[in-house]
Figure 1 (tube, one colour):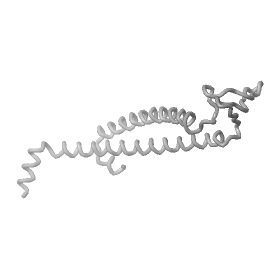
Figure 2 (cartoon, rainbow, N blue to C red):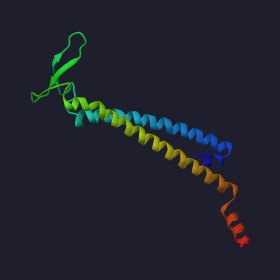
Figure 3 (cartoon, helix red, strand yellow):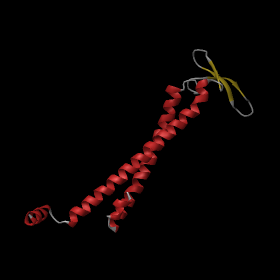
Length: 142
């Protein structure tokens, strides 16, 4: 990437900086949206025993701290914090964060590098003149 930046003039470097800042903001917003959607998906579809107020009723709760110890679903199954699905939920969230982080970083690098290549190609095209003049120049060299 540094090799590409060396070939840019100051105006193109500022364009690249603005583009990279803008794309970083877009990726952060999309990552937050993806995280929120992913957590909701994990809670609803993957870890179904994890407490969900719309699907479960509270069976046992500490009146002072309001911590929920046990809950049951519509079928009468009772779940606690010792349930394997409940214990694996934080690990699912951790994997989701790592996936979103990896995709975001790779997307950012790919887009910024692509934009830098486009700027280098554009500046080289402008430096060498109009296409007709380049063609005539190349033909005269032969």
